[in-house]
Structure formats: C-alpha cells, structure tokens
Image 1 (cartoon, one colour):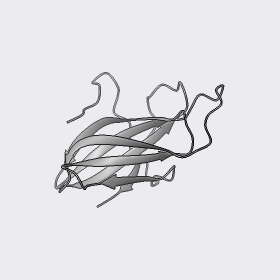
Image 2: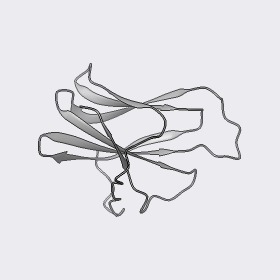
Image 3: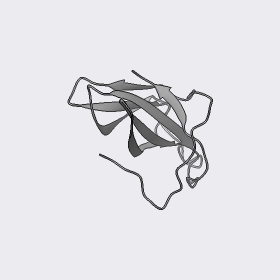
Image 4: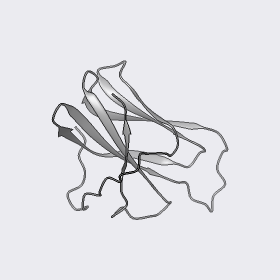
Length: 115
C-alpha cells in the first residue's frame, strides 16, 4: 500500500468537509480507485498515504493547481488514483489542494466520506 514520506509532518484534518473539484471512489475492480475530476489541464494529484482506522481505510491525497503562468486546456481532466485498498473495505478520502509550487506542510486535508 502507498505510504507517505517519513520526513513530512502529518498534516491535520480540517473540521470542514471537502468542497473542491468533484471526486468519487470506484470499486468495480479489486482495489478502490479515487477519481479526481480537475476543472482544467495542468492539475496533478497523488496519494500521499493510506492508514487503517478500525473497520475502514483512510486515503490521503494532495492535488496541485496548475502553473498560472502556463495556459491550460479549459476541459475537465480525470485523474484515476490507485489506492491499494481492497474494494470491499469502507474508505474515507481526505484531500487537500495546494497551489502550483506550494510546499506541503501544515495545510489540512478535508474529508470526503464515500462508504
């Protein structure tokens, strides 16, 4: 399963729920796949880490906005992120959005509960 780099301090989870670009979780295959729908080209998304919490798995994701100095395609772009979590398990996705070139640190993740 993916895990985060040990050098980064684990960011907190905000009380407010996730309210960014649409995300969903697909479980039609052997593992859960998080689908992040970016509003334009140039976005990047990655799984930072996963963690087991009692009867469910938590998946922490960072999405990055595109470089504002570069013109991007104004079309929805789907990012499919493999989680390594078996499809039968309950999943809570935590997502944070960073600016282009912003260094991860204290920016909190926000929860998107799927099942």
